Image (cartoon, rainbow, N blue to C red; front, side, top):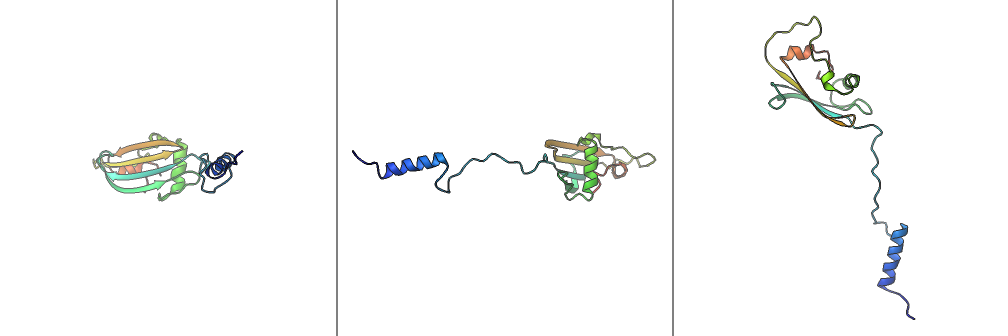
Length: 147
């Protein structure tokens, strides 16, 4: 009878150690994906620029806004902007874009467009609204696009 030695014995030992999860430290093991946070992602880029639509607008200012788990970003008032977005469930179309009562603006056509792109509560959003001029934009009672 002959003993099993050499390469065959080494191969068998490595196969057994791989099955049992022991052996070399260089072995890669698949780990299940772990979420970085308990909150769904929320990351937005907001822009303001001169032009009649988002495709032709000359962007003048842009800020970032993230509302989960805390309000952060380059927006000057992230907590107020996030609270406003939460009040409409992240639906930008429900933000008030009309002038506050009693506010008077000229009827000059010098369009200014605001946009929002990114993720809100785990869903992709893309929003665009054009105001007739900067007075109408400033007269809208919303903090989201005040930057």
